[in-house]
Length: 138
Image 1 (cartoon, rainbow, N blue to C red):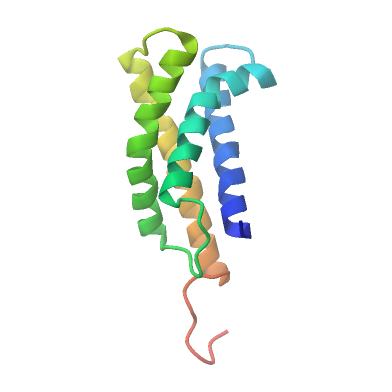
Image 2 (image 1 turned 45 degrees about the horizontal axis):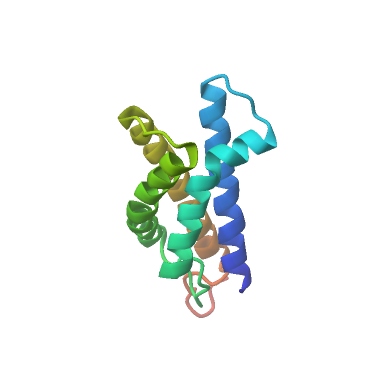
């Protein structure tokens, strides 16, 4: 796997860890490594599987634009988000309250979109496989 795929996986896992920490912290729950992993595992597993199956970690010669990136994340999360909730329900052996689902899905999606769009913007701006500059322009 080329560097972009690796960067995406690592970044996504960092973002989903942050999501778990924010959620646990907002409820005054402990922030131990095992607790954070237990909370975030269904979200990370669903996101990783959907992206592996759909090519979300595949390296391309040029990254998509920030707008296209946002749409790709939203489309993939439309599948991964509900899978994460089902996984969490099975993992904890309890139903998922609608309020938790709404907050968890919107927060994790927002964080993933922000991270991926920022990376796409940076790659395009830095010229690391992004938009080509016209001849003679530095």
